Length: 68
Image (cartoon, rainbow, N blue to C red; front, top):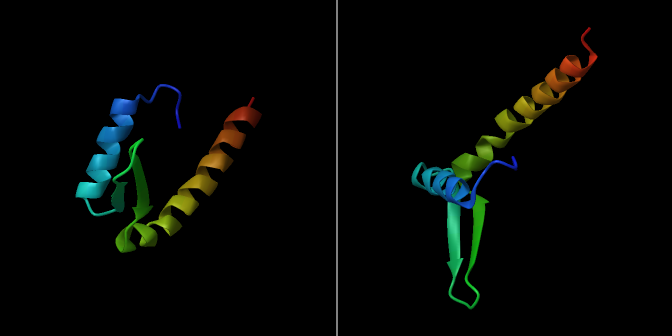
């Protein structure tokens, strides 16, 4: 995660992803509170897109480091 991301920003983004149906939030009634997130069925289908973006991102970072 980026260093500049705050807990509030992360919470807001997770809530949006849940509302959009991409993730599932599971809350456990315990002390201390525990919450787990997982990909929904449609979220799982997006993993291939994320993997392609990661490959491109890694290649772009390498390009930036190697250019004159």
